[in-house]
Picture 1 (tube, protein in one colour):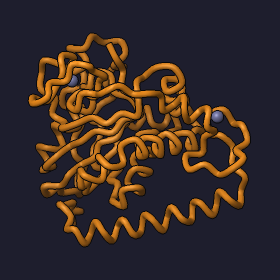
Picture 2: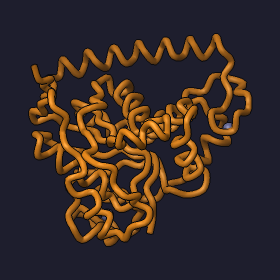
Picture 3: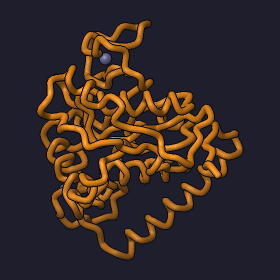
Length: 262
Ligand SMILES: [Zn+2]
Ligand SMILES: [Zn+2]
């Protein structure tokens, strides 16, 4: 029997919001019982902070952000009022609908993204997801997300890392949205070359047909929130969005912790 993920009714969304509020209450109680530490610098926290970070780290991780292009997610002062996109958008039309990053891949945020690729950094990944949620809460709610999908990692890479950070981020955002996460919906067909060693054009080529939908799911006009830790050219999310839309997704919007700037 396939699991059908379809566009939700307003009542479905309302029910899930109520459940999410309940979960947030219990997390608050747990923080009050076990005195928390900052998940980035490990300084003791005098009061329980929502994102598990001290004020200094929180400020550094959520640095001042300039206007961003809705399509490619890069910072731009030259956003056209009417036509979407910016001068930095790749010439090829990207197949996802928007990108919402927490910030630019630099300074503390860059270090945090590298850190959550290591084992045992679950709490920091959760903190970053909470900051991402706080920054884009209104937009995420307006998207009427039906399912949250993490960008898949090839199985051998997942074992080597011992940490699947896109999945941790996706689970946290889904819990905030009060919606489902489908961690196994996209599958990596093969272990692609490291994107870092390739030119922008080669990156798109490297990812072509690198993913497929898993058996046992049906996307019926669902709005998907696709989640990854960092976006460079956008090639990985572009390929994931192509597969998801071919598979029936109505929209694919992307949430990432950090966006690189050229
Ligand atoms: Zn700190
Ligand atoms: Zn752009």
